[in-house]
Length: 269
Image (cartoon, rainbow, N blue to C red; front, top):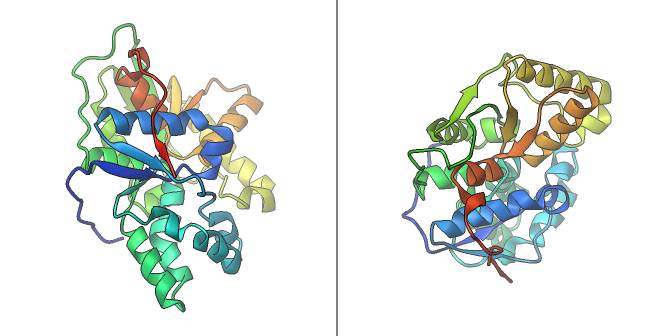
């Protein structure tokens, strides 16, 4: 993965909300918008957006992934950053969308332009917005010990583990613990968990057990698919491991939930 140059702080951005956030964890998407708006940005949410195409692509169906991507190439036409609160979806859009259209010069140019504007949320908060962290924990918030899970796509395609670590470590009142299986897949892998349920189940059980062994209060991650898998497994195992999306965790631990805020005002198009 090549290093990239980061732009100056923009005034406007797009949010690619991901289908998993839309269907299962909408509050994480809203908290991502709140974090961006609190920094003075106008957030645009194109209503025609859908899946990034990763399930089809990773299952060996590039034509289906191509159709999904093609339907969205013109939704992000302005030269604004595209913020994705999921490392795996960001990795698909940044690294694989251009490859889907190598035989179509017009679509390839659009996909390449878009891919260069895709940022995973914590990457953008840390390196573009340089998000300011309060010196003290918000009033009434007890210290928390957490483990951070970075999805395979976020870690290996987007290189964003370092960004999540830096943000969590900067939070007052928060201690980050590492566990034996921190670098390993949670077993979800999209359709992998459906095709190989026994292997997937063993992987996530190892992940939950290792996280619990640290004595942490919760597990946080920037990928909802992983959170759904780990959270469900923890409940099935009766393990004391609440899970939370990193956007919601950052919003809460920087006092966002204590402010008298209205609903996010992201512009839909």
